[in-house]
Image (cartoon, rainbow, N blue to C red; front, side, top):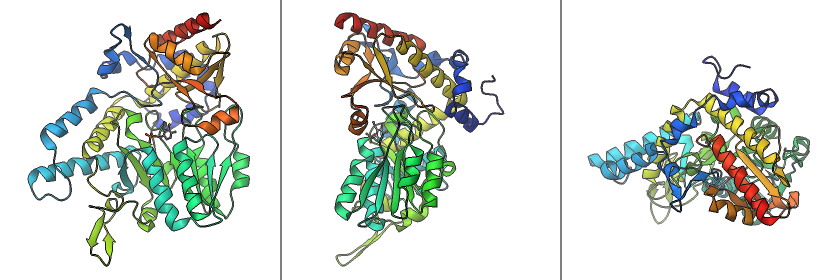
Length: 438
Ligand code: PMP
C-alpha cells in the first residue's frame, strides 16, 4: 500500500478514505504519515494546563477548533494596522481594509473552488448561511405543496429553518432515513424525490455519527428530479479539500470556527444564477444600489446579501486559517486523521460496556459512544477532571437521538493536532469512570 505520493491528487486520497476497507488494513502506516508535534506548536492553547495541572486534551473539535498563531496574529495585525470600514471610504486606510476583506473573499473562493468570488457570501456561520437560503430562496422558489427533503441526521440548524419556511409557505418537509450504522438510505431518497421536490438539504459529514454522505450522487439525483441542493459543510471543511464544482451543489454552507478560523464568520457559497434570482435576505447599508421612499434597488453580488458593516476582521482571519490549513501536507493530514480515528475506535471498543454510535463505511473525525449504565454528562464531567474535553448531549441532533432511542451520547471529535497519546488519555480516563460507577 502506497501512502500519498506526489502524483496522487488530494481527491484520490479522499476517495481511498471514503472506500476505506483497504486503507483500514494499514492504520499504523496512516498514523506514521504525519507528525502532529510540529503543528501543535502553532496552537498556543494546546500548551496550556487545565486548572494549572493537567495537559489540555482537546477532543471537542466538532464543536469548535483551536486557533493557530497564524490566525491570532492576522487578527491582531488587522486591528493594529488595517482597520477601517470597507467599500465606502475614499481614504487610503479604507481602501486597504476593503482590499484585505475582498482579498479574503478571493481566498475563500479558491479554497472551495468556486467559479467566482461573487458566489461567496460572508455570513456569521453555517446557521446563518442556511437561514439565508431558507429565507431568500424559499421566498422566491418555494410554494404551498412543494417539498423540501432533509436527511434524518441533520443538525438542528439544517432542520428548523426549513420548518419555519414550511410553516410560512405551506410546503412540506420530508425526511430521508438512515440505517442503524448511520448510512443514508439512498433508495428511500430516490423514492422521496419527485417533481414536487424544490430543495434537498443534507450534511456532508454528520456531527454525531461521523458519516460522510455521498453528496455528489445526492446532487446528481436531485438535479435529475429538478431540485436544488444545499450541502451543510460545517464538519467537512476542516478535514478534507472542498470542491463545490466537483460536488455540483447549488449551495454550500460552512463556519470559520470549525476550521481553525475565528468565531462569528462563515460562508455561503451559491451558484451565481441562483443568487442573482434570489431576493435580499436583510435590508440595510451596502446591499442597495439606490434608495428612495418609493423604491429601492439592490447592489450587485455578493453585496446584495451582506447588509450592514460586515465582519471584516474575522473574514481576514478566516482567510489566514485557510492559508494555514493549505500550508499543511493535506494528503498525509487526511491519512493521519483517518488512522487516528480508527485507532481511537479500536481502543474504545475494548472499554467494557462501551458502544460506538455511528459505524458507517465512510466516516471521519467524529466518534460518538455510550457507556452502559452511565449518563454521558457524568462521563464528561469526570473526564474534565483529567483535562480531557469531550462533548456530551444530543449535539443539536435530537431526531438522531430519538431514532437511535438514546438520550444522549459522549462524543470525541478529532483534528490533525490530536495525538495517539491523547486517545490513550481518553481511554484511561474512561476506565476511571467505569471503576467509579461499577
Ligand atoms: N451543521 C453541523 C453539521 C454542525 O456540526 C454545526 C455546529 N455544531 C452546525 C451546522 C452549526 O454551525 P454554527 O453553530 O457554526 O452555525
